[in-house]
Length: 569
Image (cartoon, rainbow, N blue to C red; front, side, top):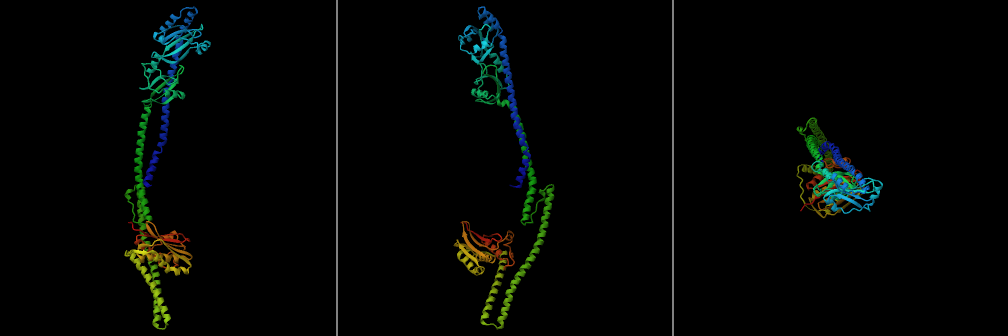
């Protein structure tokens, strides 16, 4: 993840994190506000229920004529005129009748349409009559619809043992209730316990699902938080009415009931969107302003740590203290570069002197030897056997001198880019066996196990240069291994050829590996050599398009691997 992305996310989180508790508080507030709205509906339903109760209590007052009716009945008179007079005085009464103590109808009066629907009354099987006789009180039944009008039946015990039966219309009361509005869609309904709404042909008939209302009543929660119809969704509340099995229900469209909440949500959403937008662009701008100089400094520091002291940071991207920091960084790199130049010059001078001393010493030894042997031979005072021995020693000294000069010339050719391999098909097994045979005496002298395993028949390379690389690697392995083994292995896969030289020698540390392939670098000064072999070997392998790598640990030996890529067809 880039520095800019990290800073941007950090600044954005710092700005937006406080919005999370605000959103949680808003969610709690909305739930609380919705409950308050539904509580208002519940209060209205309770008020209507109380009004209905008052209406029923007024009915008891309107039954004052019952005493006059009782007197008439005690005298054996006709109760018909008294019933008709009570009907005329109370328009809500649709029918009045007198029942015997056993519940049989003795007399009736009422509207003709109602009387047609009501047959002769016989309530002998009604268990409520004996209870009313024992404890005289007004009994009102549940709602019903008769002749298109909502009605309720009532029974009132008379003091002579008879009963007054009546049918009372609630049309006027329900009409007044349904005229009440909450907003444009909120209405008040009288609903029975099965969820059916009481309404006549002239009243509004809602499309509420009776089963849904019945379930709402069964939940005992007076708040109706969701009531779906085929077209709309309603909310509201209910309250039990004084009429047996009936409920006063207040329902309103959800969209209208919560309109103020929705408007508040829109305003808050726009406010939060504005804050989020400002936070986004603010974090973006700040991250860019802060990330650009930091990123540039980090990149420049990485370049400098990699040895590129020419890297500079543009001071124009800085601001405030960053500009001072960039200027100080640029000055530091300039000072480091000057110091590095001086240090390199000193190291180069020392290295030249060291190499010159080493080469001069190694050149002087064979040259002095040659001069001494020549002087002895020229003296003529040597035997034939001694002469052959001196010539052999002079030949060996000349070979050593030639090898040293060849290495120095190879370094010059590598630096000039003149070492170009001439590839041909190399017999890998023969080449490696030749290397092993050449170095076998040195290995036997140290009791080392020198083995060759070849799984590659042939590969394209310059045979002389590749043999020189393997000779150098195996020679080094033998030189730096005092006991154990040296194993040479050639194998391949679909991508490349691999030539490895593994030994059980002294091994190398990570610090020693870093300078291993540098020119004139020697890991152990107590071992013979000039520090040119691995440098030249890597250059040869790279000229073939391959790599030369090493894996090693101190005391656990080393494994050098030559990787030569295959030509892709």
